[in-house]
Image (cartoon, rainbow, N blue to C red; front, side, top):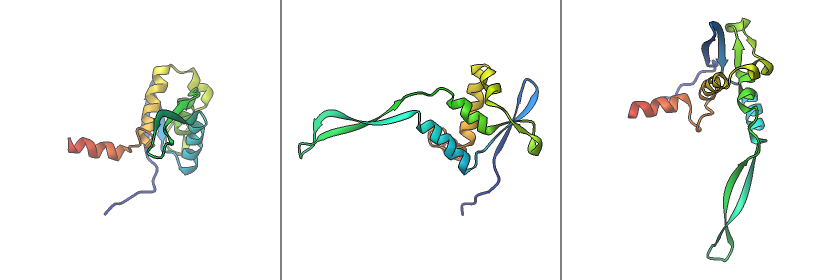
Length: 133
């Protein structure tokens, strides 16, 4: 039997000794983030130079990344909170932009993994694969 929980996942972290949380997005939050990411990309159909048996061009799909500026920061703006529990407050994008890139990258990796945004795999998928190996 597969069992699910309606409780949101939370990953407690510290930055310079202060408590923070990275939280799982709700459906609306994930949609907003995916829309922001999607608007920075364009899908194109390109000719391969080959024809099918009916003489029609065989097309290949490619994705053009127009602009990824701020994508990590946008994700963190929706998932990163200063403090713990109900008293935690969202970290502003202004604050996030001032942090070193290495810190932003690390936080974004945690947020992506927690929200199942990495390679289309959830944390449970990765754990299942690790157990098999």
